[in-house]
Length: 98
Image (cartoon, rainbow, N blue to C red; front, side, top):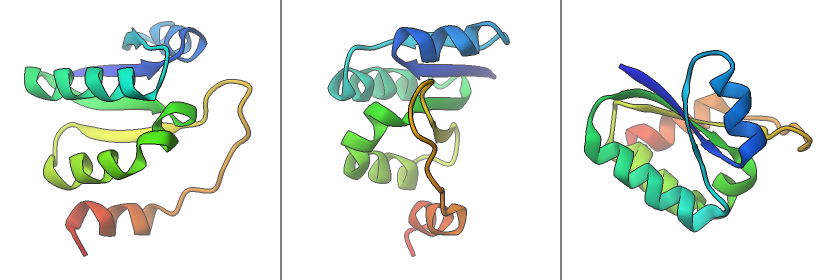
């Protein structure tokens, strides 16, 4: 299964350097469209999203994460962005519908 990074050019290129596939997007709506397209393909095991765009489509992401066990979808800080604390227990609860 493939690993795919979705985000701006810098985010995507960083993951391409370590062997992941990448899709450059220019905004949150485009990210959501590409995410849906990837989910339909069925051959991806891990999707990495830049948090600067992902944070703007959080309600849609919560629905998607709750619907799909695979691929795993993670939001990571984009280069130059400020790190934020991630509550992994809350994320798991959301995915399980609790």
